[in-house]
Structures are given as C-alpha cells and as structure tokens.
Length: 354
Image (tube, rainbow, N blue to C red):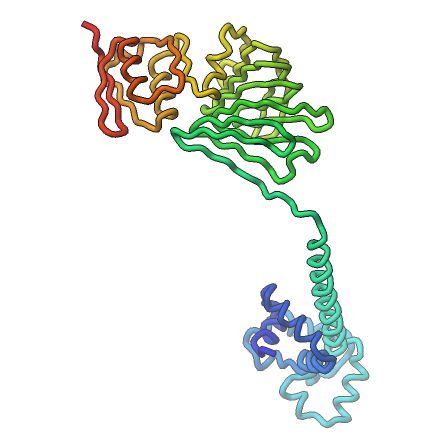
C-alpha cells in the first residue's frame, strides 16, 4: 500500500481514484484491515503539521469532560508511547469512549463503507451491461451549400437546409419526440398521439398534430411555420422550455412569431415558396434583394457584396430549379437589373440601371 494514500486518508484529502485503490487493498487480505486499524490508532497528530488544531481542541474538551489529568494525551502521541503498559491499559479502560475508541469505530466504519461502495459499483457495472444500449444524443449540422435528409427512429422524415443544426436527445420518444432546431427544416411527421412530436427553436416551438410543415428559425428573434398538410400548433418558449400555445395552424397557413411584433397568421398562396428548397428549388416571391443575397450565400456557399444601395430596394420573383451558380447569377442579374463580378467564391453586385 502506498503510504502517501494512507496519510492523505487520515487528512481527508483522498481523491476518488485513491479511495478505490484503498478499497481494493482492504479487500485483498483480512490482515490489511487489521493493519489499517492499527495505523489509524497509532497515528501521531503531534508529529504532523497537517493535523488540524480543531482535533486538539476537541481532545482537550474530552479530557475535561472525563476528568483526565492534564498530562494525559491521545493514544499514539510521543509521550504516551513512553508510558508503561499498565498505564496505557488504564487509559484505554477509563477513556473507552474517547479518542482511541472512536478511531477504532471510524476505522471499522470506513472499511465497511469503502467495501460496500466498491461492491455496489461492481453491481451497477454488471447490471449496466444487461441494459439495452441507449442511443446517445445526436446533433446534425449542415454548412453553407449543404442539405441533408434524415429518417428518425419513428419513421418521420426531416430535410435539413443549409447552415442549420438539428439536435435529437437520447430520450427521443420518451415520453415525447422532442428535437431542437436552429436554421430551417421541412418535416413529414409520423403522427402518434401517445408521443407528441415537438420542435423547439430559440424563438418558439411547434407541435405536430398530424402534418407536414416547414420551420424557418435562422434568426433567434423570429420563427416562421408554414403548414402544408394536417395541423400544427405554434407557441412560445423561454430558455428552451415550452411556455404557452398561441395558435393552431391549418393547411396553407403561415404563422410568424417575432420577439418584436408578436404573432401573425396569414394565408399561403404558393406553398412552393416555403417548401420548394427541399426539392432543390430556389423560390423567390417578391423577395427583397438583401434576403435574396442571404439565401444565395447559404445555398451556394458564397460571399455576396452589394455595392449600390439602390439594389437593396429591389425585389425578385423567380424560381431556379437545380441550377448551377453561374446560371443563377446570369438570370438573376437580368431580373434585378444588376451586373456582377465573380472571383472564386466572392460575388459583387452593382446597379446596372441607366
């Protein structure tokens, strides 16, 4: 046994790993337990600077209560070792409830507790091996220019747009199918009344009532929910915790919840504007040019620079279906009356209106 561990144990400074070593050593041989008790009883606090003053004060109080002579000292001190065996035996008899006694009890208790601790740890480890393997929490992220399709364990389908993240907790489905979204995703949910499907975003949450819906939550100050089929409820969250349901959205309804401005619900005349991206389409419907540029950056993993303020006031109505970047830029520049220059992944737009 490492002497440093024994010393640290006396001082109450053992780490968990050191306690494990001590427990293993105590279980190796009954003689180790006897040595351990003797070591504690023979510990000499006066010869160790680390021995706390509170222990010495407690000893003085004990002597006073039990009317021991002022020369009496705890077993194991330097002067006690020089006493005769008879004197030592007398001390043990008179002070049977004192320091040596409690040291022995403490030693026995520590041995028992330490042994039980390691037995319980072994039992837990053995039982953990018989438990079904649990799926760890997963976080799926996409960069600019990336999109991905996912099938969840319950059969629900998720299409995750560029520059987005979806977190699936390890307890998904128990009791609710709750996931966390930042960015944009389209959901085709397998409805299960016993296990509600809930999507939590920084701004609000969406609860499935048997539906297909799109959620846009790139901006933490707002969430947009477009319902394609079925029903979905939209509500508020606070620090990721569901607070209050605000509205139930029916097919072809758009719900927008903003930090400033609250909730608005409107009709959707062209669902493709909100869900076309999941089929590889860039769909714009009177979309302000700054938003157009932002979506192009995510879609193609590029950086866009707009040099002329006039461009920011223009809008775009167009659909680009699975088109490469160069073709999109050519058609776009004509539509918004602009010119552009491309250098690797940087595109600069300029006003082309005479």
